[in-house]
Length: 354
Ligand code: NAP
Ligand code: ZN
Ligand code: ZN
Image: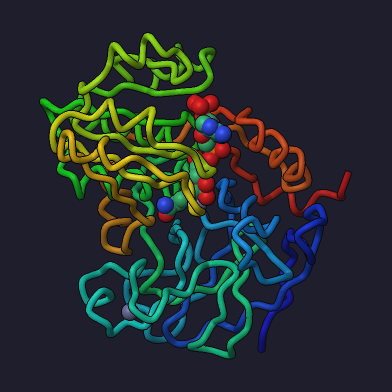
């Protein structure tokens, strides 16, 4: 029997989030049921709730940075047991037999991954998937991650999206000692990008539109700070970078950034998932520069990233909020006023609404 689960969401793009009940399936043989303790607030949640990408399905219950404790397991579950602290990220299923799924790249599933929220659950009953702004969730064990011991569970929640989305391209492009990496935008993704690139041994420069964030960037591990509106400073940094990680959440011109790249340097877009402004190919051909983009990370790499965080004691810088404060948090995130990730304490769901 399905279970009615208290959640937070919105019935339409132009409405605030509020209390909403959703149905969760009863755990099947391969499933684990998780009582959610913390859920990070990703800028994608806001894009999705407001239908910024034009493909949202309602009611929408966002949240894909989920940490919680297992309360029940199906008979075939072998990797997890009741009481384990686990995590769920952006995907809860995929086709499981295409070439990309076989390589553990479920985010690039040829038939499309089933996202944690806003997807049709084709393996079960085609119902809408609902995310982590919720008391509990039921997920197939193949898409559940182990949380390393010793990591603060609230600080670890944002690793499930902001963490893997920045870790994956840094690994893909073999970032390490001797390289200079620029991280553009100091928000949820950007601050994790700074931490990872620094832990991987690169020289890291934070490229920000907010001069007041400079000091923080250095505390997070940046060796230097570049203010993107300072034309002279940007000019002085021409051809200094091997790699740029672009986390700006809206479409923008790449021109100010392409000139920062050395010969064969690459800029990877992870922020804007929408049309970008055109660019002059001269910026690329003049130095054989490359533009790429990257989506989250596969399940094995997400586990690798969590284990890396366990070893290096890396978590996110967070501001813990109550579920009832989510609309205010969205407003602040829209203004780039977040240091550096909101995380919802799900125990607040039991408190009466303000
Ligand atoms: P966030 O916390 O709001 O941070 C974005 C940062 O970008 C801001 O703090 C700000 O940093 C900078 N910024 C914002 N607006 C800007 C503008 N108009 N021009 C220049 N800089 C601007 O957002 P987030 O959670 O990190 O998410 C960033 C984006 O990544 C979102 O669009 C989200 O949908 C996307 N995303 C993609 C993936 C993927 O798989 N590729 C995964 C997760 C999220 P400064 O103040 O330092 O300039
Ligand atoms: Zn996200
Ligand atoms: Zn697949």
